[in-house]
Image (cartoon, one colour):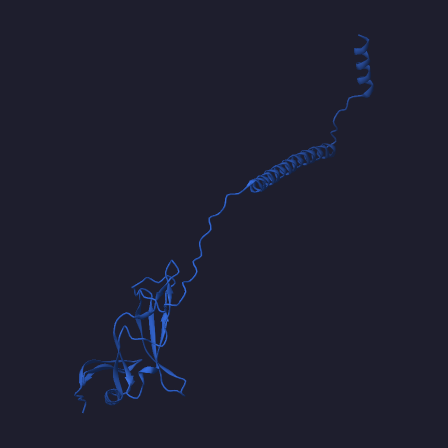
Length: 248
């Protein structure tokens, strides 16, 4: 018998990896549950598991409504640009979650997420995660869900002092010593550039001189190897010519 009276709809499927799968919805006494199964080897096994889960849920679970204005065990405080506390955070709207019939609502804890720059009356980036402690000694908790929250425009504590506002200091103009310091840095940079240019020019001239000297020596060695020697002027002839010029 694969009939379940409370079932209102669903979808069956099968894949080689997940085997028999199903997504079923059932409604009873005003409470609607959804069952998702996979890995069943036969359709009978899948139906029996789904019926067991639905029976357990309708017997041991109950809806619990959390109103947006209800106080939670933890709140977060935001500040506006003037440093004034902008107030508490609360749920953006009323929500309904499923709880065990033996659970106590007082065990619900809220963890708030506040953006870096909260916007008053906005739920943008503000969330609350609700968890339920399974027991005082169990040390475990059940996640009820994460929901959008809102920052309210009201102060949490009247006696709370406003957060100090840090004013941005405008940069002061440099004085005479500052001008001298800047001028000195500029002169050092210019001097470094000039010295570098001089060194580079010296290296270029030196390299060219050495290159030409090397070429001349190489040419002389080649001529000497072929028995060609450059003609040299005699010193006596040069002196006679010089003496002749002096006599005139």
